[in-house]
Length: 284
Image (cartoon, rainbow, N blue to C red; front, top):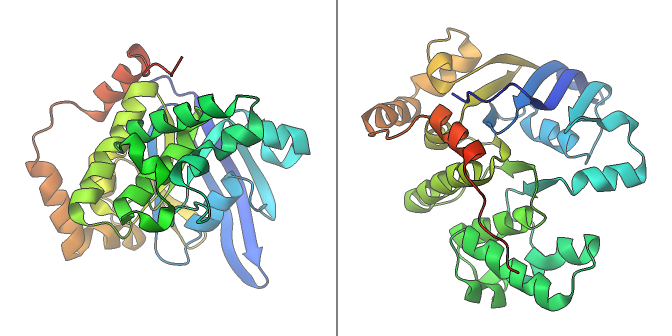
């Protein structure tokens, strides 16, 4: 578990959302702490993706409040919203890269929009972000359609990191990947938090990812957060909406694998290292 001071990065209070007569959220409350890896899980239609869109200001809830990085989203003007968006990065489930641009151009796009850096430096930083995610800089010359699923996820992550965000949102980061590629993403998520102290919020159905990297997990069901805690804590919860994630064969297999793996350090130790270590140097 994360043992950093409980500085709140995301705070959601009594959020209610409906689409016509369909109630998606009926009083959602949760908070995300600084430098933790926080996961949001729930069944299909539970409102996970809707809540993510509300956190990144792609839609507004009908009532309640959301505060991100100390800013109440419902009170932001246009320029304030733009400034706040520059402080977080988003990796979308299907990549969200523009097919007509090369990978390098996709990664550099936020810098061209929000900074006055020259093109040569933008390209250099884009290459550096690619290598941070485990890809060779030569991949930057390719187009998204030429990449494998795992490479596309990494390229999307590189773009999410290009403005050096304080907060990172990951939407199903391992969906559609083979086991080896998914495991590499697991390691990369931990590495990013450990190196730079990033706060990471992710939506995922990947039980291995949840067991291996998450500090805390919130379970959404019936319009509310049913419980929050570590995977170990949630595994003993008798709530039927929670037990479904642990009682099936995939849930038991992921839990068994987690218990068999040799752990050289706990998540708490990783979080501590994140504050004492330094981030990789940027290109000069």
